[in-house]
Image (cartoon, rainbow, N blue to C red; front, side, top):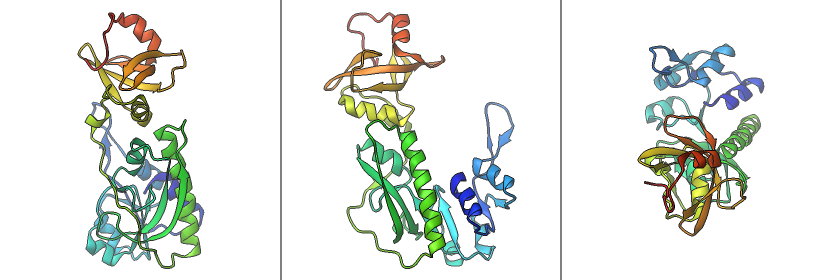
Length: 269
């Protein structure tokens, strides 16, 4: 359960019998652990919390709500507690763990949210309600994700308030959104500039320079004169904000002046 849907369900008057979230994790290099944002919000709202999904089967609730849980729900739990899932894509496109990231990297011009029935399979259940969201040319993946959370939270509350009814089977071409591997965030400078722009907009994109990692936080396929143009597969890509390894983020032109690149010295080296 993500924080905005949890708060929205409480504000809408739904009784929350139990919140299931991940165990506390260590933060930084010390031994101290910190709760997930969902656990912190649940405590603030006075809701009981567990780290074991099996506990949900015995609470006597009518329905479970899943948001960004990231694991397959076992059939014995589903038998004891029917569930719906708020999924961030227009199913059956982008079933799986990283639907927002995959839609973004694929260059989709639209995506959306679905309130769907949870089955044992991977996002195969019927859809109770869906809502489309456009992917803007100037969006970042973070902005898109935030908008999907807002639209999805509203749709979830509306759907549960109105009553679920009967779900519609998914129809159309099935695609899968596998979890993003960190290696996929490395910039391939032989790709078109528009594709590199998408990767940078996802957040965490990186390349190398003189054997050290260089993160690229902002940049674009359009040359504005405000950054540093570097060769891409079909022309030039403009670096606007970078972060050398072990240092803070800095404007790309300031980094370029300090780096004193030699003529023809590129990135990815």
